[in-house]
Image: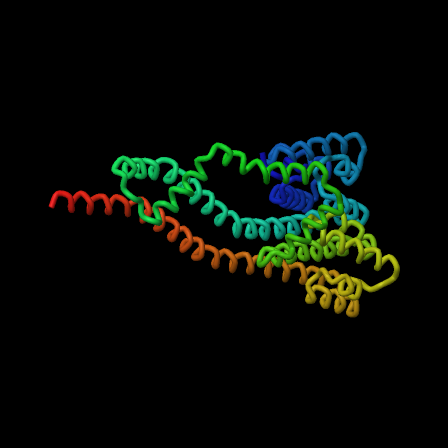
Length: 355
């Protein structure tokens, strides 16, 4: 079961594909009811297919498309609002085109960020599994032979044997339960305050925190640009943007910015005072307001943040790969030396006794 299903969200790849298909069909001047009915059966994602099938039935009963989408679970508020504005302005096909580009860009960046963490995590887990097998199976056999001869083990082997006894302890199986219980309790008793505190801590992590901040800032900029391009005013766009941001810390900062805009402050200065957003994003917002190109500037700022996040993810992965290879090589070398050093010592002792 994927995380999107667990937390009720539809995958962004599926949203981008469905939006692109609807934009293409509606651009061909096909009636809306026929377009939704045509796309629903050929959609590969089951959740999107179910959403479109439900919407098709509601359209035939007299609902508007935005009303039908609003009744479905798992659809982001940005999707519903962009469709509503597209209906009101008669630009529904371009609205779906904007949504397709929006979710396609977000999905591409998230995949790159995940790739920067997935490979190191897989390599570390694989190394731990191999080390556990060696220390719980091979090493005890070697130490048993030495014990039978009352021979003293070399220092590296004694250290590895102590580590082996640690991993062989029955209570070691309970070790993964501790973080699992902590994570479970976090989700069960999670509050807005605890979520913001946890997200703030993650944003302070070296490398990963900067990537997370840039990704959230790109989402903020892209969402504001999308909603402004759909025809919403800035205060309305900010209210919807706050609901759509994934990172709790950035969402809280965006809510503060939204309140200041409602009070009459400019977007650029409100973002600057907040202290959460990258400085280049604040400057591009201020310039966009001064020149009347806010929607274009926010789109460019979102593209910049996403590209920077992708570049940092690739740079982090390029640094982690050789470091992990060296670390794993050192661990393997230590294990090999610790296992074979007693054998060499035994051979030397047997050879000396024969002579």
